[in-house]
Image 1 (cartoon, helix red, strand yellow):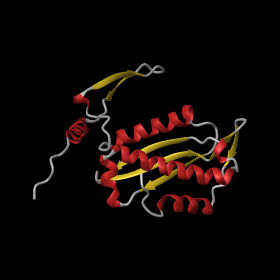
Image 2 (tube, rainbow, N blue to C red):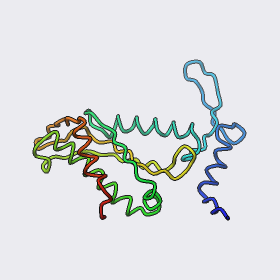
Image 3 (cartoon, one colour):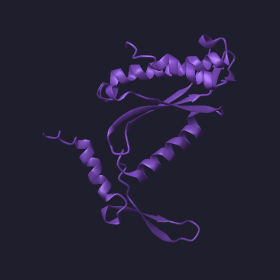
Image 4 (cartoon, rainbow, N blue to C red):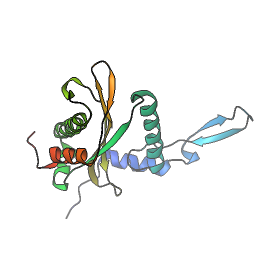
Length: 184
């Protein structure tokens, strides 16, 4: 048995992770405006999927940006779409396939929640931000989608109508999307 070689980006991120936060590998000098004291801040690796500290920082920065600049001042609900193991490989290597499946998941969730909030779902608009989560805790290929969807729709006249998302709505989403593998 011969293992597949490690992809270049994995090796690069692991090497950067070993240097993350160590002053000997680079730092910036910062100064406190109040007391005037200098201090050193070690460079971070900015690795994706390897360094917990850098991932948390990126996650917090992204969440703050979404709340302050992207989402309107309405409720947002997170939906997590998990795929069967037998499909994860194909979705990981084929961006077009993943795009198609993500589009199906988004339209099904929006259709179910719009149906719960207004009878004119065709004339309304929703909002979605999608994050593709590609690795599990052991860096295994574990694809799932995080959909941050407005908890309602903006109907004609720019009036926001909140969704009444209950167990029946969640079951409608589940039935629409996962009653079998759809043809793309």
